[in-house]
Length: 105
Image (cartoon, rainbow, N blue to C red):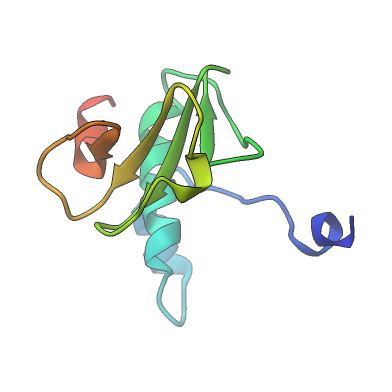
């Protein structure tokens, strides 16, 4: 499809601070969240881009990254799939706070 040609693959930096240093107009919060998640897990796991969700970890676990109001819409009906939310304090069901992944590194 032409949509595949119009939307390039994402590039993630190793550190969210680099994004701020390189940007002249500010950074997209969603990109910062995804970069943080990527930087924490890429040191211990294999990450790839799934058809649904933002990340496939070790070819088994799917994660959708977002803010406090993020829902399971993109990963609905999938096994081994979680929403990783920024601005929440506690895990509940298939939702994990983004800050918890900072302990992985």
